[in-house]
Length: 112
Figure 1 (cartoon, rainbow, N blue to C red):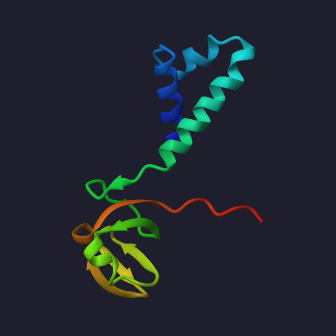
Figure 2: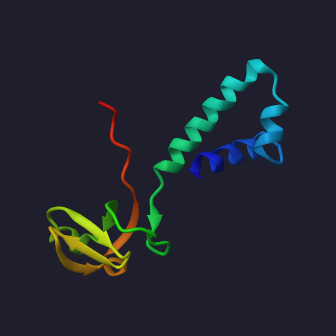
């Protein structure tokens, strides 16, 4: 999970071998600042785009970056099926890895 990755990155930045050692070695007054750093790094990781060299493993909806030449032709609801095919408004349209350059999961919807 990306939160675990964020913890490990911060631990390494603070010259610890792992997160458990890092957090257990801190005095209480430093923990809040360290957790703020973890939160910042986590948000950075969540904002990273993933190359199509690592395609999604599940069917569903994703944010995608599409090649500029194709982008002007795509309008509507885009769904990635079987990690290989882009479905536009329910109709198979393009091969995923031929036109999409990067992707990432949709963000979690806000709570009402």
